Length: 120
Image (tube, rainbow, N blue to C red; front, side):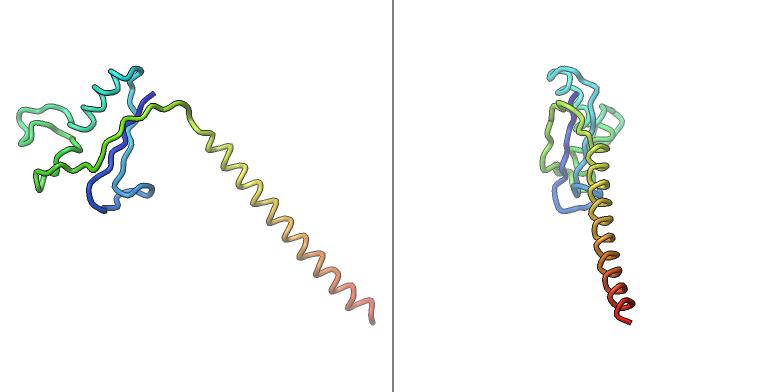
């Protein structure tokens, strides 16, 4: 599996992660197929009726006619990361630490109250 990662020129911030960046997963299974598909993503689809000759492209800034990308990368995806498992690890550890702190707080409170009421 391959993906194309695009970064716009400038400091625009249109996305939550990676300001001015976008990633497209490709259907290609070989490098040659991926390069062809990536070209379509970046250039858009040919259209002789369009001012620029292409629709839905990321390459040309329509207002300035300048190249709008700082970079475009083709990456091969080796595997999916187990983010759901990693998320549960973090949550479980966080819960365990919270529970430990709560128990320590309750023990301290118990000792304080025990000392208070046993002294009377």
